Length: 503
Image (cartoon, rainbow, N blue to C red):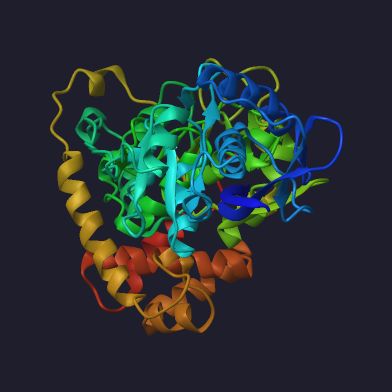
């Protein structure tokens, strides 16, 4: 007779149900795990042996075979320890087989029988709910999984607690969701002195989820501006928070089971590898662009990133998803992020200062920014220069608008877009609009169209650039409370689109 229980294997964000079968078969005493397990899974047999000895449970003198079905899907991770032990306990009659068959479990076993937290509890709970099963996991992972209220989640401290729960001797109360992480004290836009045009660009970018490129000498405030972007973005709704939390769960970034409504802000260093940015490595884990899903990806010193890394951003920017293909893994991750890139005008950073520029000016500027390909630069909706701030400006008192004031305008514009795209699939903000939808919502008036046509002819706008101007103009009109896209909206959008100076 075969005992069965269930766990999950991760393929991207999807937690696929895995049937864990255990049987005693004829043959020399042994303990085999089959079904494409990796090293961490095959080592589970030694941890299970030690736990059974700690619990005083004797293994049978026959051959034990554990099969992880479907057998052609790779199994990776230490979370298979608990389901393997549970299947063996059911085969030995220690826990009821029917109870084990109704349970999705995951957890790493310590040698004394304790349960060690594992990643991926949230997507695993979703799979359990879809299959009408309960879930058992380490007690520290349960608050995260309990956010899925469609299935009971039981958090156990040890393998013994799981046994006592399934046998009914000491039932475990269902876990409660972790606390919603309170919003942090975001840096205020009022701290930025001067740079009014850059502040305006940030407001437009936040309102429509537009990609933004900041160019200016060191110390002009590019990083300072970007770090205050989160303070003007609206909080994520329930659906967005769940999407983002599932990705963070797979990366082990959820602390104490708490889920935050704040949008993620990721700022990788320019030495980051392609796998770190796009995703990959062992198990094809999500990269920074997916960890920034529904939030901001800030890439400072943009030209310093390896060219191969920068070029891989082109498709995710357009499609809002990334496919990570490896020899043993082909997974998809969502990555609806807002890219904010910052760069100096040249390698030394003083190209615009005639008294300090290096001897290679102006060639140094074109060489440095030339590391960013034209097709990639074409994907930035707003491109602005951030001039240096004078010492006299720094001595002035802070009298600009606060982040709260700007955030109210951004939220109002986002609400307009939410209502606009409520019946349109895969569109949430103006930056997502394309095709007939874009033509309908961003049709400029006659003066605006005439201006856009002249600009397109004179500056050689690509088709992509033309549409991105329309999207930005639509966002500016939303911030203005205007139903129509008019000449001033087109004029301002065009001003953020023209090519930056490299000389």
